[in-house]
Length: 208
Image (cartoon, rainbow, N blue to C red; front, top):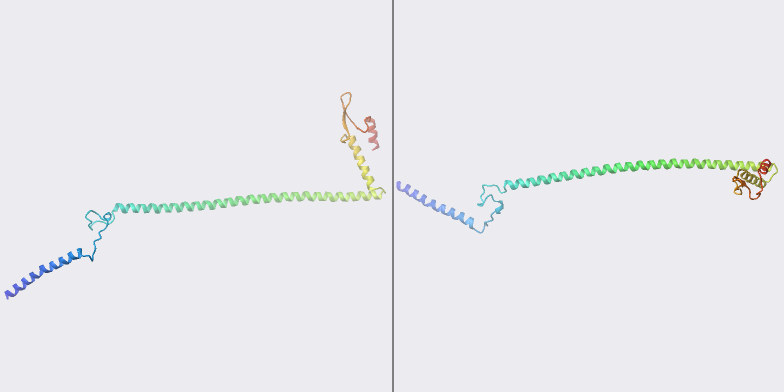
C-alpha cells in the first residue's frame, strides 16, 4: 500500500519538470520563431529606454502641446470667421448706405429737372401766348388800315420813318454822332444836315 503511494508520488514528480520544460520551450520558440516577427514601437513613443508598458505611449507634455495647438487653431478659425462675418456685414451696410445716398441724389436731380422743365414750359407758353396776341393785333391793325383805305406797306414805311425821327431826336440813332463845339460843349449833329439847329429840331418835333 505504501509502495503504491510512493510510486504514484514519484511518478507525479517526474512529470512536473517535463511539463515545465515543454512550456518553457514553447514560450522560447514562440518568442524567437519566424511566425511572430519582432516589431518594437518607435523609441519616441516609449516611456523610457527599457520600453516597458507601465508608462503612457505619448507623454503628457506632448499631448498638452498638441492640444494647445489645436485649441489655438480652433480659436483662430473662430476669430477668422467672426472677422469675415463682420466684414461682410460692413460691406452690406455700406452698400445699403451708398444705395440710399445715390437714390436720394437721383431723386433730387429728377425733381430739379422736373422743376426746370416746368419753368421752361411756362416760359414757352407765355411766349406762344404773346406771339398769338401779336399776330391777332397785327391782323387787327391790318384790317383797320384796310378799312381806312390805306396800304399796309405804306403804313409800315411811315412807322419806320417815324421811329427813325424819334431816335434822332433822342440821340440814339446811329446816324447821329457827337460833336464838340468851339466852347467845348458836346452837341449832337446829324451828318445829313450839319447846319441843323435846336430850333429846327423843335420844328421837326412839332411836325411829328
